[in-house]
Image 1 (cartoon, rainbow, N blue to C red):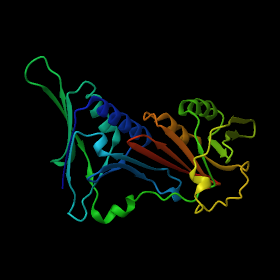
Image 2: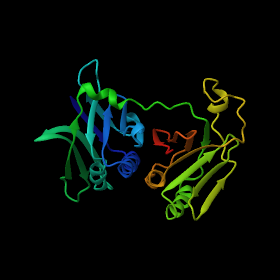
Image 3: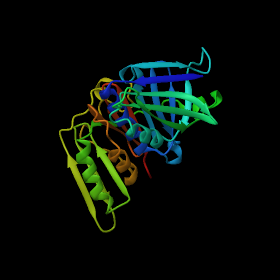
Image 4: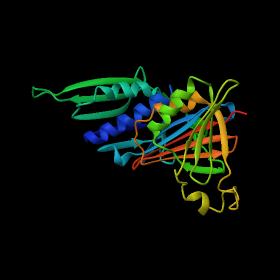
Length: 284
């Protein structure tokens, strides 16, 4: 197994740093899957056990000036590593004004991702700061645990309001309750609600728009005759939603929320060269 890559372009480096910072805010530990064309950051807490799941996909050509890898074998040309994204985020913090950043899979007492940051220097010799980030290599027999999560047929799909707006609303609500309800319909309306014995608060958004696939895709279980005003909802831990909203540094072109009534909320952030999916299971 071999892996090495290099980023020279400053905007690519900043963008990659923002993605890694977002992942570090969402999870303490995750799986990095490397393929010849893409990188994936994966979190598979089994949704059945009440955990969130995450799937973040990056096209390597949009980030790296050089990218080489050899997987486990020719047929299985992939590498799966378990790592702590915060460690990668910390290493990239030293790369703000870097001339280049090289990342390489090495073996120093244990497998490591070695991040070498080449900093500008007044003398002819450049200064290089090296970070060795311990990783675990995930054996081939466990790869099936890290498949892309399947999205159940959703009842409603809706564009999210501005993430910052949503975050400030949810932050105020979290002081009143541990649980939040998201409900939405096919008329571009979405509500965020909390209800306790003492207080009931809701914030309404309208004219958000619904992504086209809901009406066009006949394979969706939701019947085409479904009333556009009918609300689908999911109730879940408000902290999980806040963690997702607070972690965002990717500035997506589009943010979508899919609701499987009373079962799950599935968020998708779409960027030109990265997509992030986040699944939160509903509580009964």
